Image (cartoon, rainbow, N blue to C red):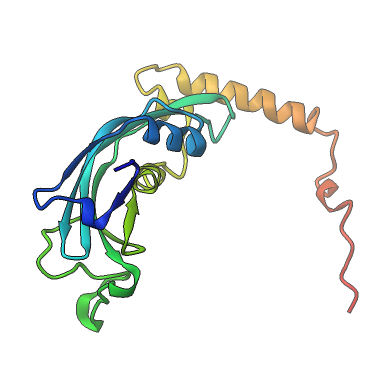
Length: 187
């Protein structure tokens, strides 16, 4: 069976242990520009539902949200998801108090629920999705270099230099300069 595509009928009753190999490196290279992914996944079949558990680790370079310098970000999601066929996704009841699909009956507690085509599960998509949801909305130099007390000051200095390079000297631009190209809508 070629990975990362796992056909439903190829999963033994005890489950399938899948180390992250070249297919995972290719997927993370395409999605994140880094291929240093490590980890493993364990796929267990519950009827037509697939439970995927495991751990993944990947270190990528992202721009600081303040100074745009490239900084390291280590993602280490714990994968715990059930995949149901698109035509067999259990719906939540009105009193469940949550959004999205419900967990199928008889499946141990998992963190998330998703869907697949019912024939085969693409584990490369599982890896990339698990890593993408771990990316924080903001990542600053101080977050990446928390043990360096000067990281925040250096980041602030780079931000000031970047800001002055874009805006020129203070006072060069009118406070209304951003409206220079504005044209009112014709009604």
